[in-house]
Length: 565
Image (tube, rainbow, N blue to C red; front, side, top):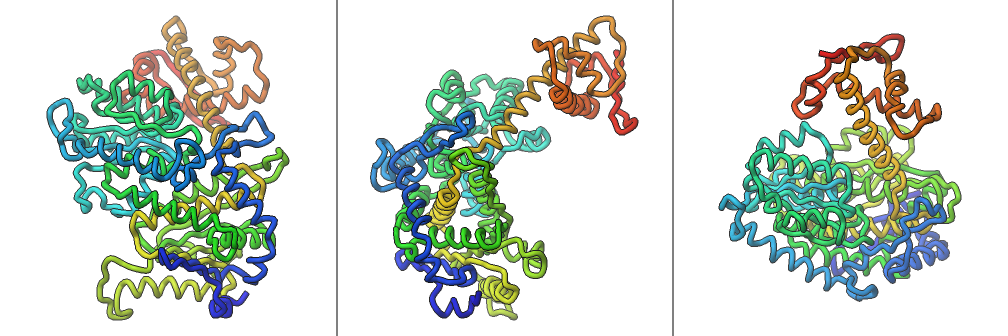
């Protein structure tokens, strides 16, 4: 590959209307081959997009026990044509306008908290796409100092992980009398989101705040458990998202609209940017379709050299969360172990990245000189909003541009493939284009490889195991309380011994060796947690009145000594 020669021969895509440019001179060996030799893949990808946008059931595989068996609608939510009833750009814009109209009185202080004061803080409570998308959007417009430099009428906070220490840190700095929790969960049963909601509800009650609904907003599907809870408790609002909208592509729905309204981000422009890129990436001519160019180039590289990691370098601090957003979009979509026909086929696309030039100092040495296991993508804005004089380069902006072009040059010399995408400037329209481009690339790659990009059985497996752990932990705790409330004074042994001792209290009479081992690991984790946290308020309040517990390592096993007080 000769990127310098390719550059001179026009290995570019450019859109005059939006001033968007894709430079693929560092990624493609032969432009004509890329543009003309993959008609089967191109037709397959475009056909997949047509099926999605017509509302056909595409989220399915022959592995029926894991198939969600539904349509996928994120493209329809910003499509000018209403191919699917009730879903189009104009309908989304109307819903967004409704949300802005309802949130504005809260921001202005016209709708007050029950104590008569203006609402001051809003917490966005979600996990996965329900958190990564809104957070990325806020950071993209305000940077990390969104609560100090933006001048927004309410302070914004995000909670996603079910971490009691960070949740405590957040709650302590807020006046809950003037705080709103926005819970985002399509099903209404997402463990992390539900747990944070339950904790927040209890804290409100503990503080004597009875009208909990006046401190809450829901974003969920109609008639979900969260929606029903919202109506029962008279939430400020319960905004609806569609069952067909997947979490990692939900930013164009109410999931993005509500946070954008609180953050006073022009979400209408964001949706229009997505719609513009969607139109661009429907084009059948490969040379005029940037998502197809990128997808085919990645596919060629994968075919020739096997799977490569994608390094995303974003040359703007405002895009620091974009690689994190892309990790879920790509890895949850493409990381599969069978194709749509149920045939074993291990696929994936690992994403690393961050803000250039900072991450260049973290891993560019290996990228340039170490193992050849990646390709690089540069992402930058052509127009900056400010600049500063720098003697060595003339200005800070030119110095940043120098790092982009200099790193491209170094990659060229070291035979590391790369793309560069340049957007006109940082605004909601271009961020919308940016997100839509990546969504389409994922769809195309999924079509090439005949996988279902819209399910996530691996994530579901972890959720089910967590649910089992939670159920098992309740059994263990109830057993401990019952055991030591009677005449029993002590227990000494490993977790497996304890599991076998209390197993008779469960409905199931026989356990396989695998079940015993698996559940013993869970019991060990729980007993270890009790040992570490029994004195922490609200962790094991009832149990700490009854017992003391000590954990020691003997012969590569943790031995627990539990003694009645």
